[in-house]
Amino acid sequence: MKEYLIIDGYNIINSWDDIFDLDTLSLEESRIKLLDILSDYQGYSGSRMVVVFDAYKVKDGLGSLDIHDNIKVIYTKENQTADNFIERFVKNYGAGKMIRVATGDYLEQKTILQKGGFRMTPAELKTEVLESKNRHSNKKHKRKERNFLESRLTGEQRNIFEAMRRSRD
Image (cartoon, rainbow, N blue to C red; front, side, top):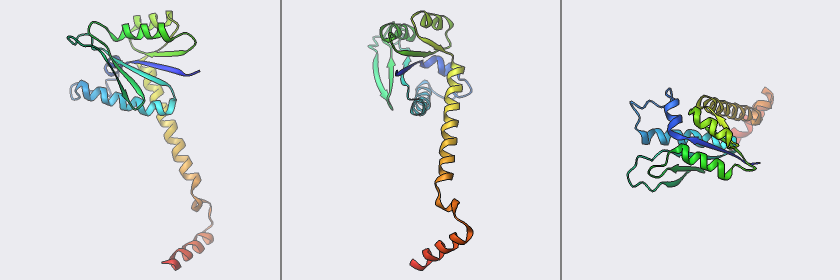
């Protein structure tokens, strides 16, 4: 069963204050940084991701759908909050699918659970993202060490190959 991970974008940005310093980063820079972090994570997790950003205060905003490295990025339309969009998504697509929603909004978490989704706090998402990155980094490092022929050669064998290499030059 394919898993969906729906992320309340601004909620995560505001919750991860050690990663997103809104005094030095603009909202646009913060959005891009979040999407880049999630893009790496999506590669490790295999989840389908949808990141929702509130645009409900944007006058005459029609809403939009963008794609950022296989992540669907939704900007809500005028008078529509990210919470409204997420609740409707879970209700419409939740049957027979695993849908996790990352938000720190307690009321939203309760609503998602009632509609058949699974909640994930910003702290849980951050932990999962970091652990996944570390796990992938460790596997990559171990794989590199194991795959070098040189690491399996004795000193004498290395000398023979080095002499062969030099004789070709």
